[in-house]
Length: 406
Image (tube, rainbow, N blue to C red; front, side, top):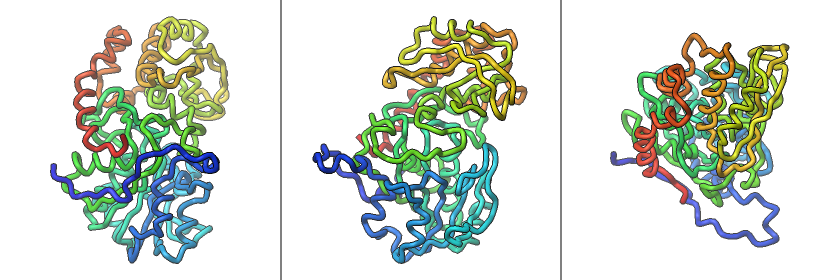
C-alpha cells in the first residue's frame, strides 16, 4: 500500500569510533538522538509517553524523568503497559491508574486495552502526540509489540500523532525464524501474522503494522538509532540492560526466549521462580534422559546440562524438579525456535508425564495447531519445522520492505 508514515532523523552509516570515544555507547537510541536534536520533533505538542523501566537514556536515567525536567518538552501523561510503568507487576498484571510520585504525572493503565476504549484514554488524557519507547526482546509473544500495535490503532482512532523511538533488537535483526501466526489464533501474545522470532526493531514493526495491518494509516514518525547493525547483539551496543519484565533479567534470557517460552504451553516449568528463567526447564519426574536425548540431536550452538531446581514461585513452587539448562556456546549458530521445538519433541518422548496445558495455550504461542498436533502424531524436529517453511518465506519477503537498517 502507499504509506503516509515518515522516518525521522535517519541514521548515518556506522563508522569506526576513534579511540577516545570507545568508552561511549556505540549505539544511540531513538530517544538519545531525539534529545540531542533538542526535541524538535515534539515542539509545540502535548506529549504522552508509552513506556516502562526500559525507557532509559545511555546513562541509565529514565526518559520520563528527563523529559519532565526539560522545559522544551510539554510532557503531560504516561501510559503503562503490562508489568506497569515502573515495572512492579508480575506477568499478567499492571499498576493501574495512579499518579507517579517522582514526577506528579498521571499514569494511565493501558494493559489489555485496545480499540475505541484505548482511544478514549488517549483523548481523555489531553495529549495530541503519543510517544512509544519500550525495549523489545524479538519474540512474537512478548506483549510489548502488541501494546505498540494497539496504541497505534488507538492513536489512529483518536486522531493522535504517533512517534516511535527505536531501540535494538537484542538478539539481532539478521533474519526471521519460526511459524507465522494464523489469524484465527490471534490474541494478546500475537495479534497479527508475523514470525515467532521476527528479527525486527520496534520502529520497523511499527512501519510493518502501519503498512500491512491497520485499517488506515496512522500519522507515524519513527526516530532511528545510529550505529546499530543487524548483526549486533545487545552486549555490542554499549547500552544499559534494564529487564523489560521481571522474568527477563539478562540478554541471555532474551536469546533463548523465542524458543523456550513455548514451555508455558506445557505442564513443565519454564524456569519462572528461578534465577535463570527460560534457560532452566523441568518437572517432577524428569531425569537425565532428557538432557541426553536433546544433546544427541547435535543442535548447533547449544548444549544441555542435566539440571535440578526448585522454583520459588509459579509451576512446582517450592518443589524439586528435574530437567535441563541450556548453555549457548555459539550465538551465531544457535536457533532458538528450532531448539525450542527440539526440546518439546524430546520431552514428549522421554517423560511419560508430558502434557499440553488444557487451554491449548501452545496454539496461541506458536500461532496455529500445527506444532501441537505434529508432535502428538510423533513428528520429528525437521518435520515440525518444515510445516511452516512456506508461510515463513512469505513473511520474510514482506518484512524486507519495512527494514530500516542494512
